[in-house]
Amino acid sequence: MNDNRFPNSGTLWTNDYKKQPHHPDYKGKGEYNGVEFELAAWVKTDRQGKQFLSLKISEPFKKEAP
Image (tube, rainbow, N blue to C red; front, side):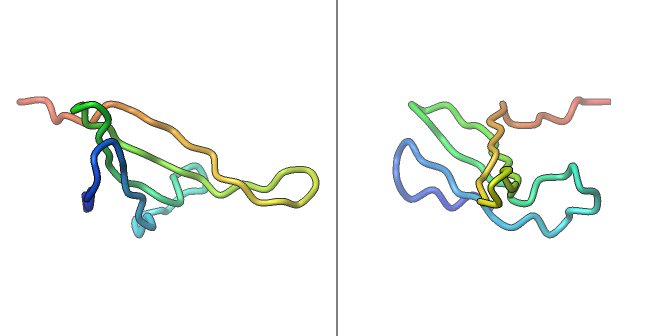
């Protein structure tokens, strides 16, 4: 899912697993100054009817060992 071809960049993909309205419309990964991060984006509409993207940047998910 990570398709970074350039330094200090990221990629968003359509979230095929979205089941609830609060789930992101797009998800992806990126890298900045050698630090990896996860991206999430939601398509929203403002009061004038214009669409925009709301973004969240977070540390990569790490599954805890049992």
